[in-house]
Length: 306
Image 1 (cartoon, rainbow, N blue to C red):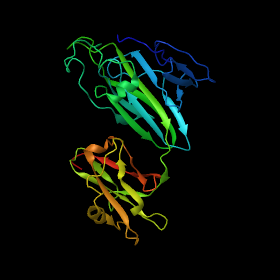
Image 2 (tube, rainbow, N blue to C red):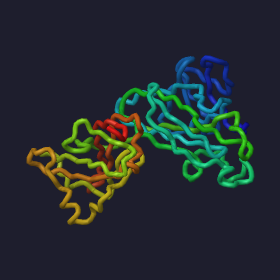
Image 3 (spheres, helix red, strand yellow):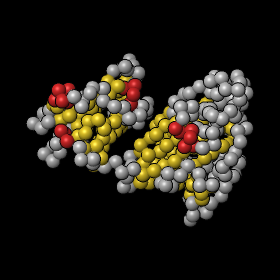
Image 4 (cartoon, rainbow, N blue to C red):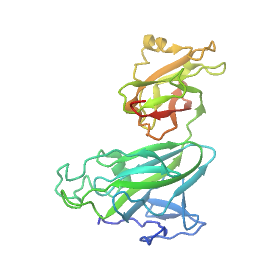
């Protein structure tokens, strides 16, 4: 079993689990400055928005769910950035669920033995620091932007690395995650795949997705800082060089025929990180004056044959 170095806050769910920490319903608990979570009842916990890590190391089979959750929040004013990473032994892989619907799967990465490290505990890449794990290329991780509102998160461990080279998976799964409210700035209107309804996306396609920023009497699309545009969870950058004045001019169009100029940018589907169960996608960016902007539109994920 991988070494447990953080005290883990847990509850009893369906069967007896290792209980490594307890909290009252009134006060959050911070263990060694790394993990903070507040118990609301015996069946769920609410996430703090202070960016502190919740670190779990629990006995489980491959495909098991981490106990102690679901982890919930209600952010009525701002979206929430949810960051998840493996740590300790390279590398577990996760599926993140929101109200039992899968919203993201972290990447499948090679285990320590495939990378030809002598032991599972060779450091690096082994680390007990989630920030180090997140910044490395060894550990499976993801960043998910959740819109304003209520969310209920559960986490499934779908791959656990072996303790011995070529051997069976370790008997425990490990994960670290945190939540932070983010001020994404001014909301703008966007149209994914202008002229298409529904906005069908084939995630296996090698093509691009057009996204139009819609102009209005109150919003001039030429004020957008095009180099700042990012689309989808993996922050895909525009396929075309919109910093080139001629290219930029070619992408100024009136896509909704309202007599006002719109800005169309394109993104490689494979670079967006849009999950297979997504029903919306988000575009982020800035204006020339530094104001943050974001726009959300609906999507429909389709199979290749559709």
